[in-house]
Length: 253
Image (tube, rainbow, N blue to C red; front, top):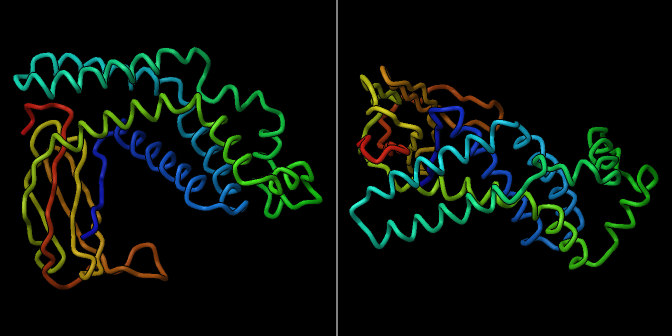
């Protein structure tokens, strides 16, 4: 099975993008010892810096953390509620402890900013263009990894907070078994305050969902997987799938 997540709010869309980039960064520095993997990690680091630089992001996260703390305080399941309260408190404190603008320490590093600019040029980080970077790539894996971990460290509180919020969102969901007749599924409306729609479909179907959803209408088309085009034609067969609706509001279901 493969799960496709479709955000239904701009806030969740931003959270998912940032989560994706942080996970990619961790994979690139941990699972591959190659200097080229660390080159990709630096590129991802710069993507994180840009994607999370919006001034309102920190406020969005803190507001949602506070709202979740208030909702958890009203929960009847005391043991799990206490653990979640502690998680929410810790990530909020971590986020508040970062006083500078997101990624400011990276922007003040002239070497990193020169590298970031050269990465915009095809082949711009070749040894003769940036000999200092070439030297860095020749250093032992452990030293390069330590540098990358140092550069990402002050960005981690943002990721930690988003991870807790997305965990809450994904856990607060309910599932419906559906069938897309001739690759097409329509539903009059979703439940109120749905923030994330997840579609689970068998890999053997070789189809991906294209989702159009709001509080009035939900339309899911399954498109054939194509290696030549980003969107293949709509499939002309019945596709069984599961639809998970997730909300930050515990009463939404």
